[in-house]
Image (tube, rainbow, N blue to C red; front, side, top):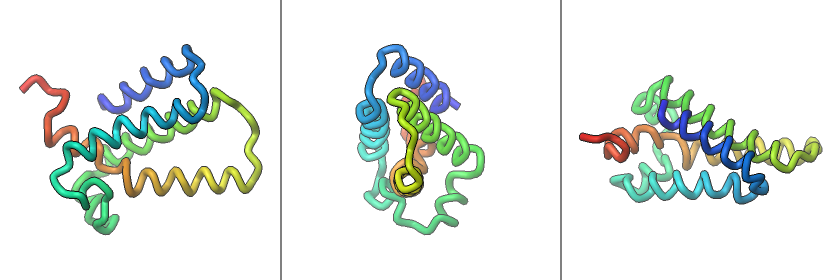
Length: 122
């Protein structure tokens, strides 16, 4: 849940500051990529080399859904900043990039944060 709240606050800030599409999306992905890369125990945990079924069993439905919603909010927010209608090719291209980023880089970020207790007081 903290990931979703952070994402909403991030989206509001980028809308207020009117940051362009690239930096609005890039800053978010680089920040969480750095956190996941820095706190992952193994390289295959960072890039999710395991089969999806195993990753899903480790992470669970709730965390997977929150991560998916967070990433979708950032993509939608970045798109709304510089709104230009996508062609069919651009829409398919962005959708494929979204799926690849979620599957191989972003999926598991809440598990990494929880395991290392980055934001907890304990």
